[in-house]
Amino acid sequence: MDTQEDKVGFTPFAEILNGRLAMLGLAIGFLTELMTGKGILSQLGLM
Image 1: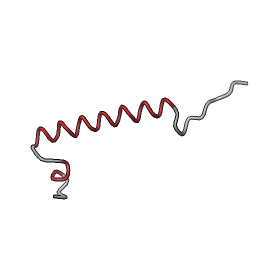
Image 2: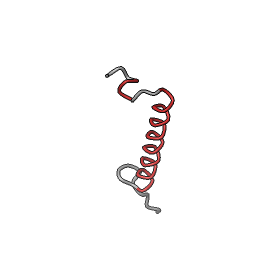
Image 3: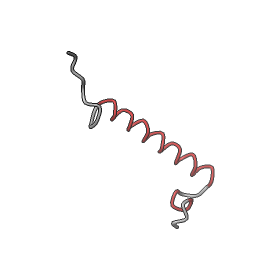
Image 4: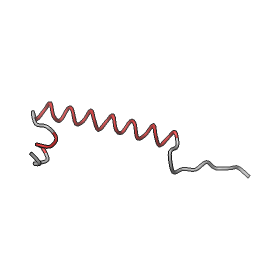
């Protein structure tokens, strides 16, 4: 019988995906700030 690895927790796949999504979110945040001229807090109406 084959053994299966856990699919939850700190697996290499989950960490790579999390890192890529974080980089994507940061890049989108920077681009939005450049396009609007406002920071994220100003865009959300918090400042």
